[in-house]
Image (cartoon, rainbow, N blue to C red; front, side, top):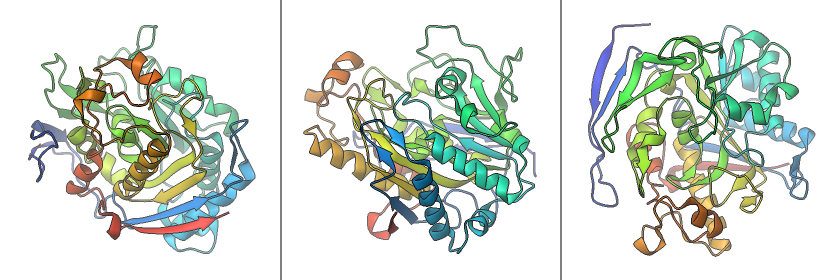
Length: 394
């Protein structure tokens, strides 16, 4: 790999923000060159396989059926890559020499997280390909969230579960940085790579740098992204793009404050940074459960719903384009304002208590347009008519 550091300044998007502003200038620093076929959008741009089953999860107990999920995973992977057997499908994307990262999402704990059943089946198939347990890493930025979800109970011994920080920014306990192995670090950068970062000044903050996790830049060869179907107060909806971008870089919460969000351009900018873009080769959107308001969190079941589906693809933009409709249609059915609503009358800046009580309250101007912006960076297909959706029922 060419390790000569290069710096590039991203130009503004070819179209302006909805509020008439241009995205801020971004200074992207990386020593990694893109793969011949970057993982995003990968070998299947614009293709999404949607596997649905009314039996996959019980809304009363919130429990998923592992056997049904296993069948959904098998059907989805075979349809995505065009293979007849499950093992052949996984071998199209992975090989025994790979070091695999599985980017889970724990932010919606306890009700809506990357399902144990989906994660366990992905690990099982990687092992079937011939990848050793010690070469598989589940990762998330915050250890406290991983602890609450407790994936270890559902995985074989030897699979590593790693975070870069001890606690999320709103936790009552002091935060500590971890190293690449998930152990407490004395390095001021901890588990983040000081040579791979994006620099931007959004609100005059002191720390203007967001650095990639060292695990991503220096150890993994391929990444599987397993986001949920969730509403989000800043981005409108959070799916593939935000999970892999904001979940692989430091210091990202600074992009939204006091009713304003810069997520419109920053989500895609982070996702496009090498080597994250090239190494993220598979998107498995967990739509067994979802959050239609108050996301990305789900401390109660008030806004939890059950799409009962899993989406498969290599194109994060195409999957997220479908997600925008899923969340907006559910909000419409519940009598809530659209994720595209930008009216001042519904804006109560940073009033999370009112937002949690009233689905017609926004705590900032949402930016669902971040999905389309990401398409302009070459991360995938946004135009709905150009997305090929294959629907399967189990």
